Picture 1 (cartoon, protein in one colour):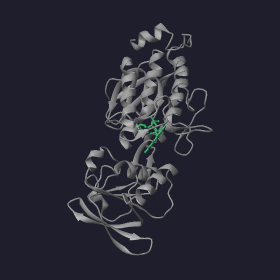
Picture 2 (cartoon, helix red, strand yellow):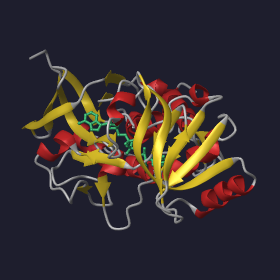
Picture 3 (spheres, rainbow, N blue to C red):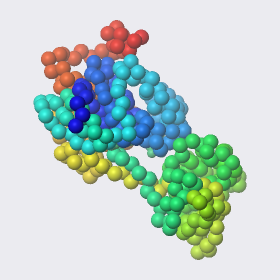
Picture 4 (cartoon, helix red, strand yellow):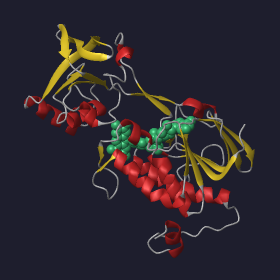
Length: 341
Ligand SMILES: Cc1cc2nc3c(=O)[nH]c(=O)nc-3n(C[C@H](O)[C@H](O)[C@H](O)COP(=O)(O)OP(=O)(O)OC[C@H]3O[C@@H](n4cnc5c(N)ncnc54)[C@H](O)[C@@H]3O)c2cc1C
């Protein structure tokens, strides 16, 4: 086992909520290390929808998901967070009061006075549709996420699904692709009504083809699709020509090791109180999508609020003898000094 890395706070997960944790904890003089399974920061925003615009971050009318992550990284720069990417936290053990030993699958050990679980849905994986032989096309011409829209420029795309991701990518990729077909098993969509209306307008303008049915097979060679075989709802079967297929059948949230950390769980999320977002274990907090409480909304802005309150309580563990005085960044010269402004 390696020499332990000592820190005030160990944040598990470098999604938007974990990143903002660095800011609020930093304002209160707590140093953070962050561990994430992904090889980049930003969680779902960076991994699942980097180029999609987000419209519900207060005071930012529109920002891409990656843009939000970049701005968060800029905002937390003064606090010098240390990232350990491509590593999964495996164990958390209480070794003091409060002091935790945290280990990763990469062989690192941390000793932290406070542990903040910002693990989102855990290790999330897209659901694979039950199509024979699909594995041979994955990452080549079958994609479960859009990392770069440019990669789809000029392509014939088949988007499969009826939820928000399928509809959003139909709208976003239509101007980029040479042709878009949206395939759903019925004429009833789970996506936001506004997206459904926009998609139907494109269908009426003959800019998108809407097909009702299911993919039963794939045609192509060496991982490159040439068509998907589709059984339509009228029971006819035929090919839909495409260079790329994007199935959006939802995500499987695999909680992963979080389930083994001795915390009280409510299905796959961690119940917390709404005063400070502490778990059943004093000194271990859960913020963002991984937690639950009455009225919980899995929104980035909810996570940001949770971070602010969590930090106040975390301060008591890290500095038990220091009284915390509430201050505004606009008027506190000591906070501004920490921010370097
Ligand atoms: C397509 C789509 C569109 C969305 N649009 C919006 C929107 O418009 N507005 C909005 O507010 N929200 C939106 N959301 C939801 C938003 O992205 C989430 O609420 C947000 O990402 C939650 O942030 P988080 O930091 O809690 O978790 P996540 O972003 O899920 O990050 C958690 C991180 O923890 C890591 N992790 C998990 N387990 C471990 C472990 N054991 N060890 C190390 N690392 C671990 C994961 O790898 C991940 O990077 C959208 C989500 C999707 C999928």
